[in-house]
Each structure stands twice: as structure tokens, then as C-alpha cells.
Image (cartoon, rainbow, N blue to C red):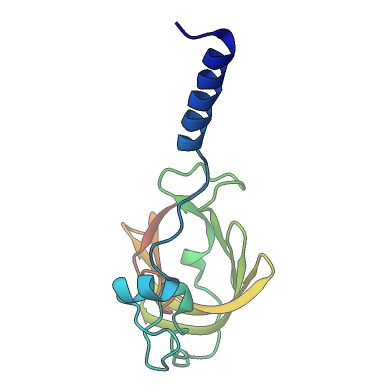
Length: 171
């Protein structure tokens, strides 16, 4: 049998070993950042021919071709639209209000500065956009479908996916 002091010594030694095994210190990395980049195919980032490592580093799309002079948006496109499941209230994220010369989105606004109408139910607009302290130019295709009950919008400027967002007309 162990005496009190000896037993206490063993107890503290065992506790110290347990705590050492539970250390929250991170292990040292086994590879450098350059080795990691090479491993995932990034190559030499300092090379002028290196591909961007993310879409955030990608160069902006080429300048858009000019559209015709701005014209008022046709009346049949004007009004308030919202996502199919939206409630048409002002705080709906995908609510859109189309006026004669502008589009008001949830957190941004676009002023028409170029116009093309390939057919009676489709317009392509160049928009000078501004919102959340930023300014940019965007090209948008708007098409009326199902007799004008729905509006399909898609970004054709190269920034977005190009997929259309279907909205319903609000009363």
C-alpha cells in the first residue's frame, strides 16, 4: 500500500500526463502554403500566366457591346413583381418595381441607359446600378410569359449565372 505523500505524487503525475494529452495547442503544419497550392493545382501564384485561384480573383467580363439609346420601358413591363412564393410586400427580398426609366430592387436601383427590344414580349436593358455604396453596370433581359402574368429576368452581362428568375405580377 502506498503512503499518503507517495500516493498524492502519483495522482498529480497522472493528472499532469492526462492534461498534457489534452493540450489545445494546434499541431505544426506539415506543409507550407506554397506546397499546399502546388498540391491542389494552384501552381506558382507569382507567375504571370497563373490562373486565378478563385472567381473573386477573376478579371471582370469584357466591356458590353452598346445597346440602342435609352427608351422608356414598355408599359406592359412596368409595375410591381415578386418571386413566385413572395408576398409582394416592400420587405420581400426579390420584389422588383419597374418604372418607365428605372428598376427598384430590394437593396439597389438601376437606371436605364441602353435599350433593345428583340420582340414585343422581351426587352434587354443596360442598367446603371447603384446600391449598398457600390456602382456598376448590368445588362438584363426581361421577358413576359403566360400572357404577361409572369416576368422572367436574367442577367446577361456576364456577372450572374444567366439563369432566369421567374416573378409574378403583384396587384
